[in-house]
Length: 242
Image 1 (tube, rainbow, N blue to C red):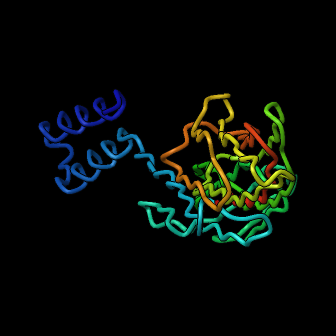
Image 2: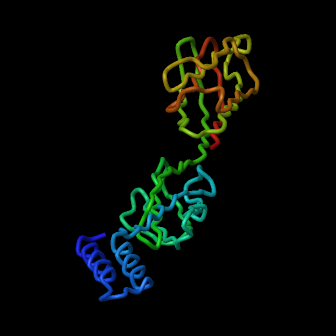
């Protein structure tokens, strides 16, 4: 209560006691109440920022495959209206909307950013990545002969691969029917570590298959056909699935 008001009240009481003035109790209460209201500080509003969330239709896609990103799982505890702005790595533009479709013409891992803003101007942002892959297929044919001839076939095994399969067909090409044709087959990973090796392999067909849990490194793998004796024709089919 301010000093001037206190002084005024004391004056009223003094006058009333002398009989010169009879104060109204209701008026005095109103005066005190008004003064107390002035002493109260205004209460500020404490809104909450939204929480941004990105939901991709698939975190891994093939080249030129369409992927959908949704921000509709974003929340705001105040119930404010939300707006959405998307940014994509390699694209200088920004895009609005709760959801958006994209496709990628190149392999790689790309950043996606979403900024969610409520009607009071408070915002939150979140980032995620999308992995863009491409299945790999290769077919090779040739010949190795003697005891020092080697053919090496490389294949890319990138992050996110599901399976690697190598199919081979071997046929002796020796002119001398009494000469036995033999080869060694070997697969080395991107770190140069031997994954599989089979020696003294003769004519016939076979296949080596691996899942993502079987191979620990990514990069260029090498399938080697190493001549041991005679002459050997080969056909090799390689498939890396993502």
